Length: 209
Image 1: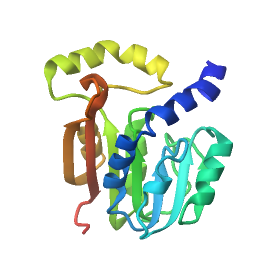
Image 2 (image 1 turned 180 degrees about the vertical axis):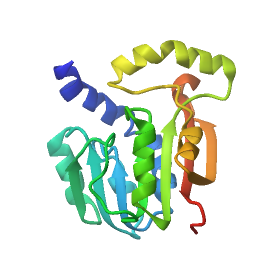
Image 3 (image 1 turned 120 degrees about the horizontal axis):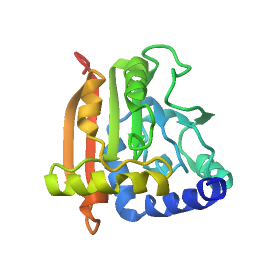
């Protein structure tokens, strides 16, 4: 899987998640963020042009370094300073409690191995009044679609380098004691429901603004 996961899959990922439609979805998800933001699952930097001007600093984490030259160009074009770290989100993050005004994951929670530990760390490093924003695909509310997702998931997990089709994103977020303040459920246009069932939302600590 080395050649595929290191060179071929990142290009497939960049192409499939870099469309005009997905870029619009990213902008909508990220528009409420401000200040110093932590992005978990940086990938090829597709979120960079989608952050609003009020984001003044960005720290990014990913366990892999994908398409380095392309990512470097995107960082150079970003309107804010970017600190890029190669860190696996499954463990404890090297940040103090309440460090970030915002945390973002986009098409990320599907692939983190210990997703509940990662969400617990998001809770820890998020400021009391901070916002955690997520844009994720996941489990359908339609039973027939969900059953198909369950059947296909082992193949998806292998082909897409750890991606899962059938995670219930809102439940995972709530299980980390994050309070969901806004949640939109919808299906991406012109996309099979197994792959296009979306969760877009904003969460925070209980009692936060």
